[in-house]
Amino acid sequence: MIKKLTLAAAIALVTSPVIAKEEAEVMHWWTSGGESAAIQVLAESYEADGGKWKDSAVAGGSNARSAAINRMIGGSPTTAALFNTSQQYHEMIAEDMLNNIDAVAKANNWEEILPAPTLNAIKVDGHFYAAPVNIHMPGWFWYSKEVFEKAGVDKEPQTTEELFATLDKVKAAGYTPLALGGQNWQENLLFATVLSNVGGKQLYLDALGKRDTETLNSAEFREVVDTFLKLKPYVDAGSPGRNWNDTTSLVINDKAGIQIMGDWAKGEFTQANKVPGQDYGCFPGLGDDSLYIVGGDVFVFPKTDDSQQIAAQQKLVESMLSPETQVKFNNLKGSIPVRTDIDVSSMDICAQKGAEILKVAERQVPDGSMLMEEYLYGSLKDAVTEVWNAQDMSTDRAVTIFAQALRD
Image 1 (spheres, rainbow, N blue to C red):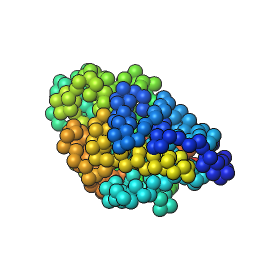
Image 2: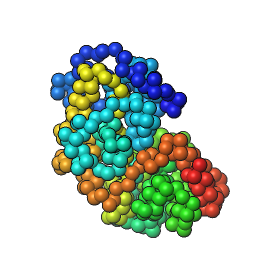
Image 3: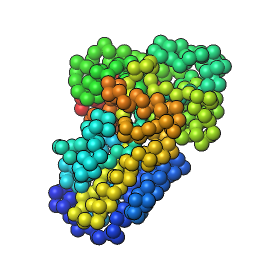
Image 4: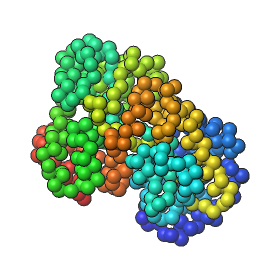
């Protein structure tokens, strides 16, 4: 839809009505309990800095993004709009639909305090076009302490071999070994986690970034695909179509051993009054040098030459990334601060683990959505779902499916 926009449509945005001084209308999709509490922190921070927050919530990420784009095209853009840290908004940049926030980024030394994958996603052609508010790592391992104990598992698995041994013990003890919600994006998340843990950094970057024939037909990529397929027997029959939070409940209620899910799952444990390190465990990957997939959320700022709205946009960025707001917001969101210079000692042990790893550049890799255009990322997710849900899928056939999807 964006590609059909004309430059004239983008320029027309400057004619939007004048809004009250430093009133910021913010469009987002954070409507669940924990998310709603988190966005309220951003609103309170902005108003404490003298602004006026106008909340525009739209349920569902794709719905909210479409609504924000439609507002821009129609000439009445919001002050800011929520997107994922990805290439979702890069076409909008190309169409001159967004204001840059260079002044705030440079004044706050973003080049020094933000992780490289995030910087690469928000800085385009030398300008900053999005304000990142968090880091979400989609490949965390969450496990029930009680299930591990009853299954005779006395330590977190450090290798692929130890992971399968753990799953076997949990299965033998009568529990669901691997809790997975059988939805397109959840299956893709599982594949990305296997790719990062089994394939390593170079293969991960080459497979999702270069997407060349040599990489996709390599023995290393084949091992990743083979490992992914071997996980299927450990998933319960109720997996297809199950929501991620209902899947997390299986671990919370000690019915399943492990769930691989983003750090937003932590909010479900918190709402159930479960304590990390006591009731459940968390680890970001297999081994002390496992990769940390960097994802997250950003706000973009629709094009306008209205000085009051530009001031509101800059004030929003300043307040969202202040150290105090970052800690309070991310505590509720389940993520970690996007700034690497913040004291996170008041956060839970899972967040502290993530924040410590984020300081090690060698362990960072961007989420797959940052490495390819959105249509191609959709093809990858479709391929993952096809491979995972086939009744009889060989490794050879699966490799071919992935290679075709990633080269289209």
